[in-house]
Length: 493
Image 1 (cartoon, rainbow, N blue to C red):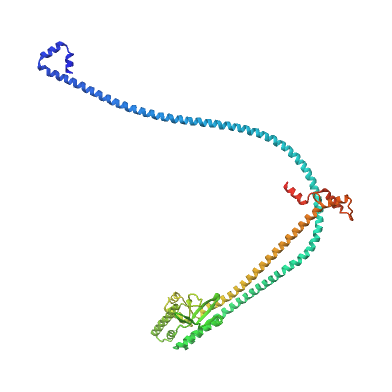
Image 2 (image 1 turned 30 degrees about the horizontal axis):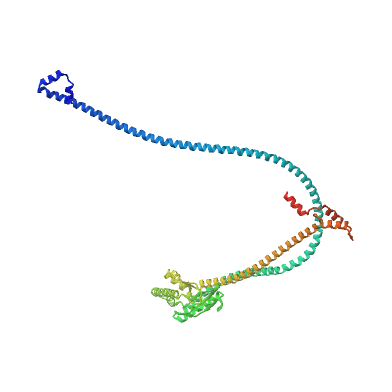
């Protein structure tokens, strides 16, 4: 490059340059070098700018190509949608043309139907007029014939009904006779049950009054006997059983029938002999024990000091508690042949004996219930036994009620059978009347009826002894349909 620059300079400049010597050559070279370097930097910057512009141009070209591709795809989609719309338009045009063709056909057919309807309307009016004229004639004939036939049918039916009524009355009387007997028995049974219930109510009121008096007397007797039997254990046991038997008798229970004493039960666990087994309805039983010891109680009522009284009442309470636990462990309800609830009645013959024990130990009654033992004194036991007696009365009433229900069921079935029989009789009467009317109408009604045929025989020269009724002959000549058929015709209209 330096050489090209020197070659381009004038000759005098080159001579001067060489003449200037080496002293001036270095600055010139430096200047040339700086100039050349600046030009080179400028060219590099231009080249860098051109490259940047080229890169931007390439990116722009790429974007343009992408947009061109996208536009081409959208153009294809639009062309496809346009083709689809054109196809749909063609289909709609075809459908519209078919609708127009169908509409024209419908209009033509509708016009034809209007013409046909007008013709039919005219024909219908003509037929209706003719039919009304014929119907008026038939109605007039129907009324006359119906009235005459009704009178004749009633006359014949009255004769038949009178004879049939006499026979039916005898048959109905035969059917009602057992029903009347059942009704009389049913009424008598109801009156007997009502009378028995009134007697039982009066008897119950009387027994309640006696119960109050007996309770007071037994309490006083128990106090006296307690004092008399002090220290005699066997006598106390017998006396307790005696008091129990008195209570059973006062309640109206019968030994061997309503209750049983000292029944023996032998099991694998040993022998059991409850003092009393009371029979309850539905084959159930109630066990009563009367072996409670009252020795400690007699010491309590005869104690002279508070210390003796306290010791005695403690012993008395413990004796009752021990007896409760003993009875609870026996489990009488498990004995074979004994259908008893899971409770045993422990009878204490002295009211105050149990009262004093409860005062000393308020939880005594709850402990008894926990052991399935029900403590009873003469008063409470008598009340319970009277309830047992009432249960037996209710059982008897239930038995009578069941018998009454059976008789009522028989009566209902008998009455139901009678009603069905009477219904059958009514249906037979209706059928007989219908058959009679149908048979009699065949004499002079309908085409080719019997009276008309008989009249034609007479015209052919058949000898007759007696003429047929003129009225029936005139009706037969009309050959009208039976009344039932005319009625059907009216209903069809």
